[in-house]
Length: 226
Image (cartoon, rainbow, N blue to C red; front, side, top):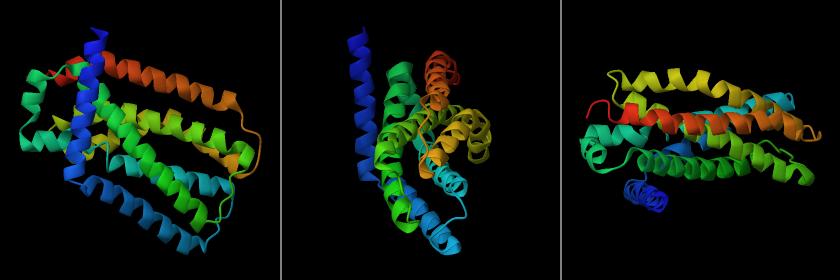
């Protein structure tokens, strides 16, 4: 049973990759949003921000709104095309949730790595070598939370009457317990301070709770209109 679920999850993930490769608008939108925001911010700050806290906040704002332009569309495009009812009828809820969540996670992580590179270049940022591993652990935890919450809320908002406004309204309060600690940890890294693992361990637990809770509640959301 677990093997079939895993295979079905990979099938959903492959479907998302194939569909995205045919219509690259989502990737380009995320890249252009990140690059435009970074460029304008760099020009406004003249290449340097006032302090590490400002840099850290700007960095996570860019990643958060990049998620808004990608994870939000995981279900809406199928809702508009009319294929979502077929997906509900022939696809299991859990494989669909985790397949789309895995795709959203890897897509957002790839965009975040690219944005990190341009962020360091444009702002003359400095990530100490001894903190580089912790920086990417912190990034992965933040992206995990965004993809876990975003996939579930995207499915919830896809069937709502007010699709365009519901997702960000729900997303921000759910993500605050993730964004605040990872932003503070990023600030410490930019300042060259020691990385405190205990500061982001609650983020790991919260991400895990988001993932498990989403899997438990997804059946009710997914089959509500079937």
